[in-house]
Each structure stands twice: as structure tokens, then as C-alpha cells.
Length: 179
Image (cartoon, rainbow, N blue to C red; front, side, top):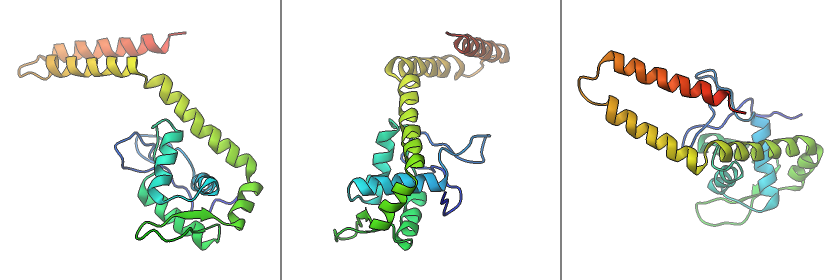
């Protein structure tokens, strides 16, 4: 399988959660070749600009991930150099791209990988929906507010901080054991 460009994950930006390689033991959400295929697939569906591609991926993951412009734009340049995408018309400074015949042939040749990557995008959206639903967000916001109010004051004893940490650890353990 073609993996041009090495490994690239989703980077920083847009204020959303991102999976960064190398820090904190977290692994990258997608390899460069997988992200190339996603971009190519989206461009085969319809011409798009770079930021349109970022938004489309973010939508397909339910907001869980959005690749950074610093990853997307070089990858678009690489796909263009490979002859798999081309500029689609001229809209001033914003360049829309579309898949070429070679790009569509690559999608066909790597159809199984494309389907697997699209399934991964859908799985991220489903996981985000399960773990980031309104009741969970409300509870997390409530917890944050209580912690800031109770522990953010001057003169809070170390014992109080340790007791709060123990309560949070216990809650995490209880959640892990839920059916």
C-alpha cells in the first residue's frame, strides 16, 4: 500500500481534541497514507478547498478530530504532484481541488483500505457521541465548577486536595466497572 509522506497524524488547531503522536504515549489517529486516501475520497465526491476538507473530516468524526492545515496542505501538494488531484477552476486565492483519473484509480486499487479508514472515522464519531453526550458534558462541567470553587480558594489544606483526588479516583474506578 502506498504510504507516501511517512506518518502524519492530526495536528493542532480548531480547538478540538486531537491525537498527537509522541506525547503522553498517545498514538496518531491516522497514518499519512490513510489521511491521503480520506482526502482523495472526499475530493472524488466533490471539489473542495483545504478548509472544506478539514471541516468534512471533522464532521465525519463527530467533531472528535480535525487534521491541521499544517498536515492537510502539504498532503494536497503531494497528491497534486503525484497527479492524483488537480485544481478545479479558479476562485481567487482559495484553491479547490478535485480527484483526477489517477486519483480515482488509486481509490479503486486501495478500496479495502479506504473502506477501513472511513469506518474508523465513523467509529470515532460513535465513540465521541457515547463519551461526549450532553449528560456527560453537563456532569464534567459541574465537576470542573465544583473543583474550581472548592479547591481554588486560598488556604485549602493538602488533606482536602488529597481527599478530592481520592474521590475522583474512586469515581473513575466505579465507571470502569460499569456494565
